[in-house]
Length: 615
Image (cartoon, rainbow, N blue to C red; front, side, top):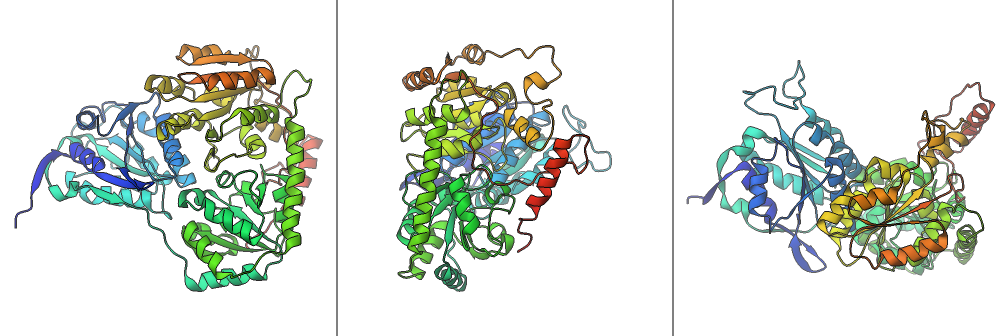
């Protein structure tokens, strides 16, 4: 029997393969790869772009303004889609490729899928060195694309056109694997992109992918049930994996039925609504006094879908020394941290089977009541810090409170870096599940606006609300223009507090003098203010600069009625922050000429005495 083949260039074959991959979302078959973000250069414009142009109505290509930000937009898309669909980001060689390394780090840290395709140098080396090639004298096989090895789950360089037959399915499998999910990178040498090959037609047969749901080991599940039933003060910590598993309702119902207080990580926030009966608020360094108080007394921590980063654990100082951990996680690496009982499982399957395994057990009513009481105190604190005052400059908490109050139940809040993650973690009261995105696995300044663009693509029925500080705006704002060009609207709220205020807070909090963070403390002739509204207007956005909280509320209402990306700016306080934080381990000089630093160093050493170390 002769195998049927079709003659295509490697680039054409790659694109045809992507067009024939599908997945199921809400019962409907949809493209696994619904689009491509691309900036073309000499490394991808002649071959890959030729292939993409031919399918532009099937696999749309969107032009970004910066390779990093377009890859971040792809990540924001994947997060809004809960990893069910994957965007592609393509660059030329050299600096264009390297611009995507930061985005790869974001995807890798957050366990999010994105397919990165970068041009590469010539395999035949005939024209070497080519423009933008970085040469390694002792190893000519190395170039800038090798930098992606540190920040991707799958890496390959195609040096023969047939290699995509084995490489592309492996890349897809990695990005859909709940344990290994993350970015996949494929380098495309320029001479290999042009090569024609007789590809088997069956390689391009439409394929429907469904992410697997690994079930827990029976013995581990039984031990988890035994530990939970023996606990007097259990606490659930809900992580981002709950979203990606679709386990939000199952975990919410489990917590309520069993009377277990439920705290949330940064990635896990929004799995349950703010007013859910078991909810006790965010956990850790940018957390609530309620969740942190319960964590300090809990004798069992049930961690679901979380990698337990330091901001969740208070650098492992937030828990009682004798607290036991049970971790339900699809990734063995995350499940086994800090000697937890590792229940390696999909979150939905693990929670459902654990619920059945504990029978009619419920937590002690006094412990459940303590969670309710602590959260009531926390809500009273939020009401107080969000209350308007006569101060001329509003705080972040007040700004967040106004935006939150005016946001619709379906609106998606997006932020990532600076002072806003802590303030929205504390002050944003989630009205519907899956309406909150705070990227803090990598805390990447510049994610926010790009992710707003990607999230608007992912769900045209809702408008993302992006909140950033002035420092982040200055770092990466060009996708305001991208969103205007493509017609994907977002609402952007810029809080101008005169520089990197939250890092100035940390600097001062550890005894350091204010230095090189707030503009007024930098080596500048004069800290000239930026008119962010006029700058955004120049990129085609509708804008409004507001002076008060009342004006802000009216501006949000107006922004919801506009037909394109709308930017609102407001001056905000650089020194007022919402309390509730856990301790954080950072380096503090052991000796200093500043007495404040010496005092902070002593406090830091005392805090380290509360850390769980390897137990």
